[in-house]
Length: 109
Length: 121
Image (cartoon, rainbow over all chains, first blue to last red; front, side, top):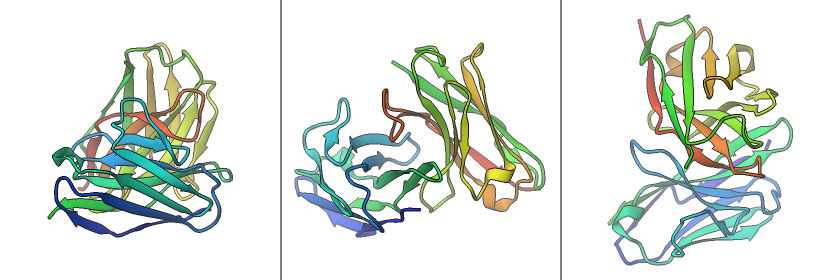
């Protein structure tokens, strides 16, 4: 089963700054990787899938890149509502299921 | 627009069975081809996949929970359900239901807001 490692665990930035979040897979996952935003008390929100495709309605300040084992989520200029926890996720072929990283908390500096 | 809403008791006693329902609104649960999943998140921890059910009734479960998990689909009520038996304090978490992207089983694009479940006597 693939293990996803996210870094850093916490990222402290100011609104307007650029955020770069990392997700590393224990083995190649090709481009089968997604990113979610999770605000407290809310539903997780799909941001990016297939490593670089933005989900419906997601602002273009969010972008994903990478393939194989190393992936990045970039937020070009942080808005106040972007401060949340971000998870990367992969689907396992066998046994079938879904694996998440432990998350990166993006907090206001 | 499809929406999901979890419901169920917020408190369950140890060794009993946790039962949750996810109600699908805005579209029929039997229209299209999707996987409908359950996830959970203990306080201070990450998201854990519990299991899923396909529109055709096929199920897959997390191997660590498999013996205790039952997932079912009720198309007449546009609902799917989770039963987790022999619960312990370790099962205390916020539970979410979710649906996969259309034409992709890999990612979840619609989620419920979650329901908090505490296991305690």
